[in-house]
Length: 272
Image (cartoon, rainbow, N blue to C red; front, side):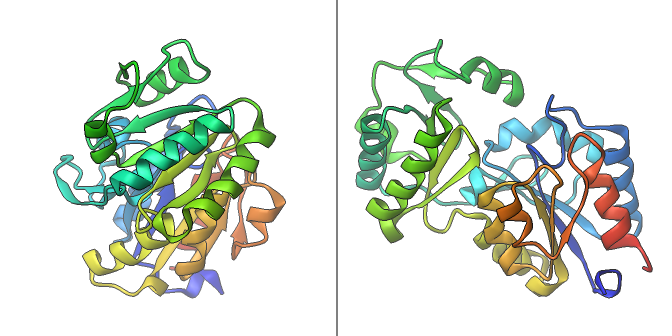
């Protein structure tokens, strides 16, 4: 059935999906992107990363589709020019930071162009800097001006149960004022309510002048389920949890075993 769908665009998550655990873009993934292009199917990316943190993928993938950074908080063209952005309400941003800190997590704040942290030695800071290829700006605290420019606030901890509990509490306390979902087991991303991967599907459909049914999505984390629900074809990675897999149309291999490339060939290009 899936091979017969009229898929015009593939929306891919990045970490845990498009790249390996070591953040490597494999030759097979690049080849699969080329095959999509040859078939007239646009490849677009969405991630909790800032747009700058995906810039290293643009040239090797020869991207032509929009890039949705911050889970849709900022949409950019492949030249990184901004198409549209969604900032958090300043009061909501302030409450989010306090909630995260009260739950014992570290807090990071992203604007359209900057990454702000309070402790350069905190868990995952060095790894994140290596991943996104730019450094954070260290601040004593987040000012009102910082909060007014916030596109995404992240709660960080290696206590994964604490992060999961904070996700539920943030969803309860912030309600419709924000989107709160884990992008990694150790990251809780809080963004504008329209900055979620489900809304990314709908925005890309408008930008491309296609139906959401003509979009395929592929991802591995709970925040990817929102885009699964709005797309015509959804593919969960083999490294996804059983809960995420149950929400997808198809399941591919893990990101350590060329799951992205295999999914492109088996579920999107086969019989085309």
